[in-house]
Image 1 (tube, helix red, strand yellow):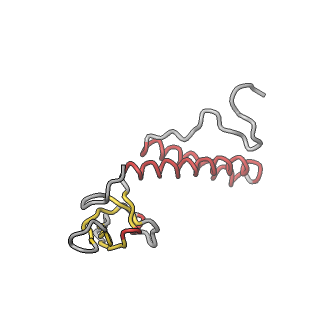
Image 2 (tube, one colour):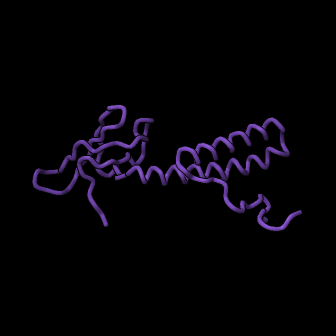
Image 3 (cartoon, helix red, strand yellow):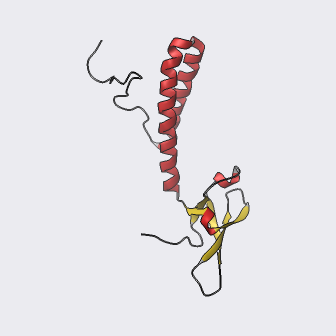
Length: 138
C-alpha cells in the first residue's frame, strides 16, 4: 500500500551526489505545489550531521532503518562472495595476497556477525568450477 512521505518520515536521496546524501535524512518540510493540493513539489531533509537540503519530490524516496539493514546485508553478502572468490584465486597467485585477502574475508564475516547478527558463511558454498563443496570427501 502506498503511503505518501510525511513530516518526520525518514528518506533518502535517490541519486546521492556526495557523502552527506548517502545518509538517511528526516523530512522536515513538505513543499506543496499550491496550498490546497496534495501534489508535492519537494521535500526538505535534515541529515544526521545537521545539514538541511531541499530536493524535488521525484529525487526523494522513503527509506527506513529496516531498508538500510536489508541493503547492508545484501552489500555484505555480495562482498563476501567476491572476497571468497578472490581468496581462492589468491591462494595460487601469491602467499601474501592470499593471507591478506583471507584476513579481509574473516574481518567482514566477523563484522557482519557482530554488528548485524548476520552469518555470511553459506552452508555449502560453490567452488569456482561450479561443483558443490558439500558432502563427499576427496
